[in-house]
Image (cartoon, rainbow, N blue to C red; front, side, top):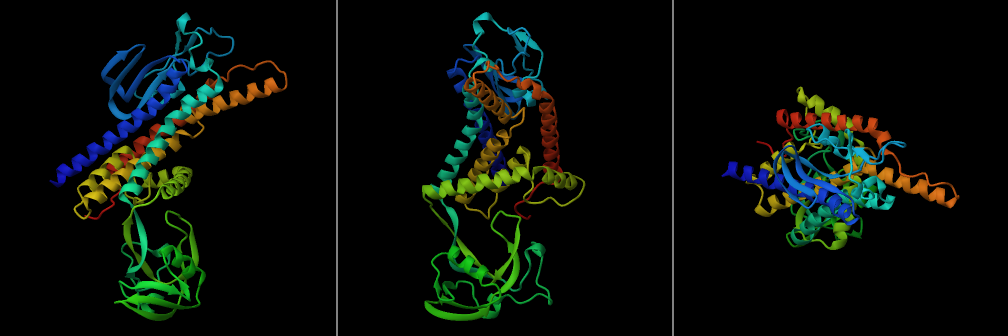
Length: 436
C-alpha cells in the first residue's frame, strides 16, 4: 500500500507540473493568436513527438521528455537590419535546442507573403510584452489560486498561546541541529527555571495581555535579559511565574537566514490549523514572493553546496531540487502514515503552488532564453520609439534581440548544467523530509 501511495503521489505531482507547463505555454499562445501572430506549434515536453494533431495552422502535441514545453511563434528573432525581411530565424526542436526555444537561434526560413505583418517582431511593443509576460503571469495566478484554496478552505498552521514544548537549555541558533543535545556547560532555559509546563496557556507577559503568539514573541525579544513576570492558565487556574529572560542567538524570522541576539524564554507554541481570510492569502503570497526572489539571488551559491553533496557532502534541507527531487518528495509525503489525509493533500498543493511561483519568477529574469529577456527587449523598443516620437526623431524600428544571443547561449548552458546537477544530486543524495 505504501508503494502504491508513493507512486500515486509522484504521478499526481508530475501531472500537476505538466498541467502548469501547458497553461504557461497557453498563456503565451492565446494572446499571440488574439494579436494575429502566427503560431505553428504548441507542445508539452521535449524530444521526439509522441502524439500530435493539427488544428488550423497550429500543431498541438506531446513529446517524449516531460520536462517542459514550448510554443513556436514565428518571428521571435527578427532579421538583422538590411537582411531580407521575408526570412526569419527558424527554431530547432532538438533536445538542447529546445532549452533555448525562446531564443529562436537557428537558420533562416522564408515566410509566406500572406504572413507579412503577422510576425512577432513586427507587432507593437506592448503586444509583444503581453505575449511574453502572460506565460509566467499564468503561473502566478495558478500559485495564488492554489494557495487561496489551501488557506481558505483547509487552513494554515497558526501558533496558539498554549505551550507545546519547554526547552531544557539555551542553545544558540548557530549550534542548533536535530541531534544537538543539552550539555553541562549549557545554561538552563528561563522557561525551565520558572517551572513552565506543557499545556500552560500564556495569559500575560509583564502586565501585557497576550491574545496571540504574535503578541508574545516581540515582548520576549525586547525584554533582553531583564526580569519577566508571566501569568499562565494551568488546569483552569491562573498561576504567576517569575524568571529572567536571557540574551540568545535566534533566527530573525521564519524562512530567514539572518541571526539576531534577542531576549529568549524557551517555550514553543501549540500549532493548530485554522481557515484564513483572503487578506491572509494576499499577505502570504507577498511573503512567499519575496522569499523566492531572495532564494533566486542565492541560487548560484546553493548550487555549489548541491555539487558538494554529490561527492559525499551534507545536503541542506533548503537546497534547490529538480523536478525529480520534488516528485520524490511528493511520493514520500503521499505515503507517510504519520500525516493525515488532509495534511498530505495540503502539502502536495503547497508544493505545486510553490513550484508555480518559482517558475513564474524564474522566467521573469531579464535574460534570454527566458521570457524576461524578450520582455526587456519589448520594453526597450517601446522606450526608444517613445523618446524618438517625443523629440521628433526618426522611428528607430524594432529592437534586434538576436544581438543578445551570446548571452542566451551562456544562460542556456547554465540552465542545462544546473538541471543535470540537480537531477544527479536528487538521485544520489536526495533531500529527506522525514527520517526512516
